[in-house]
Amino acid sequence: MPNMPGYKKTAQTEKKKAFSGKREFYTTEYNTTAWRKLRADRLRRDPICHKCKRAMATVLDHVTPVRLGGEFWNEANHQPLCEKCHNSKSAKERFMK
Ligand SMILES: [Zn+2]
Image 1 (spheres, protein in one colour):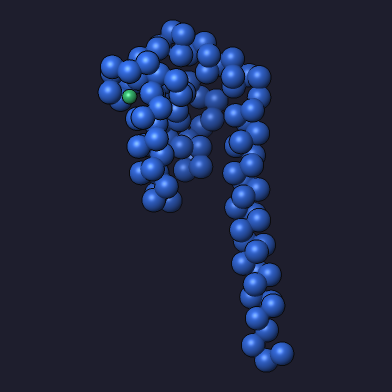
Image 2: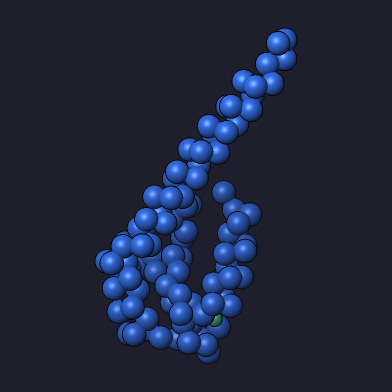
């Protein structure tokens, strides 16, 4: 097999696996009781969306996404957002590295 297509494919799969593994770590953090409690407490104290300042916040967002080096548990990196603002923020972040 001169071009070794199988080898290349394996390398790409491995890279993908490592990346999704990293994401899974953060997903695990979101699933902890500690995070749910922290989020619920924050949304109770700070119930209005920080972006549009009108809608009820339903999401506790990371100002700097954890994926981009933001601290997961640092309250200074948390902001309550409504779903609409959170979705538009996430859509923009998808293009950031
Ligand atoms: Zn909003």
